[in-house]
Image 1: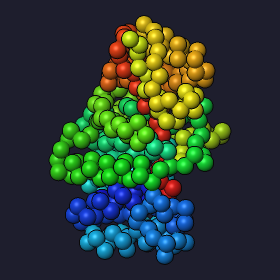
Image 2: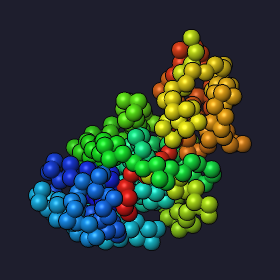
Image 3: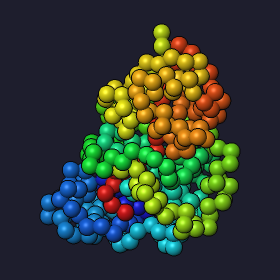
Length: 236
Length: 94
């Protein structure tokens, strides 16, 4: 399995999956551990600050019994297909829309199931896409927001909220690995303040570019951030 | 009895922090106009000149309004409307 992003989502997801017996994990990230990560990125401890996330994360996951490849890098249009290749499943926990849509486009083209999530402050969503098996992420959110959206930079993200969504990603991944196709095509939404966790079935959307294969070329311009930064909207 | 509109955390700065507001209207579009009158700016966050913004999902009683009649979807007292926007944060990596 490929875990994209050893951050707030990838940490609990990978840790839970390793402890659940997922034997082989590739961890993809190009960042170093920062002190400000520690409240939510539970793969790391104080001693890891300043060190590559994939190296420290891999060491932690190996201690749980998993065989882990530490892969330093990012999911980019030119590398995405190589990164997802030879994996049974991809779990994505990146912090930007471009990577989320690139991940689903690459997995749709490669025919690999994908679990994704996003969180800001106390709220988040999770969704699993199985190529050829119903709705994809583009059926839900269509494309990178390029219009005006609130930026939550500085608002922060709650460690407990990303923990919930990361664990939910792991749960969806385990269901898919066990052959439960019903795990795909449901939009899960969590609100830690309102105390709600809901799942709604999502139907394939007519005209969805992802389902139609129109995004299979992974054209770099499709994932370029908008000039005004709106594509990074509602980030932590 | 009014219609309940559940507000996601990203938009609660427009509702004084409220996670739900009561509103009136015969359609989703009218409902949004009604909420926008008391919470200015909300409509602009949900809609553009083409309709509902593409990164925003609106559910009427758990059904995506794209598969109903969009902004013309009929609503009635007691219905629950939920707004689910795309959000991308949570990692701090990759």
